[in-house]
Image (cartoon, rainbow, N blue to C red; front, side):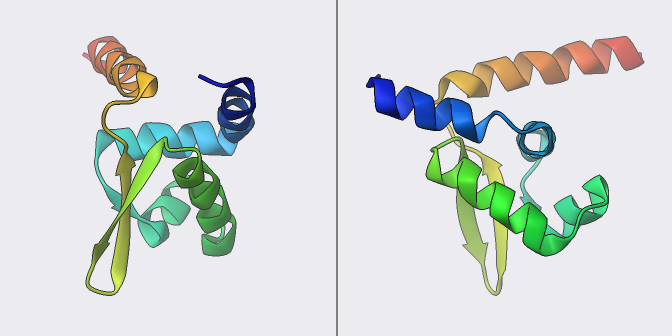
Length: 94
């Protein structure tokens, strides 16, 4: 990975709100409105964060009619990391 691409990726992950969005989108595809409600943030704020994560290649956008859903992009190093985190959280809740 080129140094500039790595720096861009790390910038995208440097915000706690973006990390929470990443975790939520890994659990299941979600629209901006649902993500904003889950985080207690405004839709424009969430949309801006999602745009940064999508531009970094971490999230993918899927249009479903007028609605856009965000989910974890397949084939990234973060896919397995997030999946492992979700499994750990599920075991801790049990």
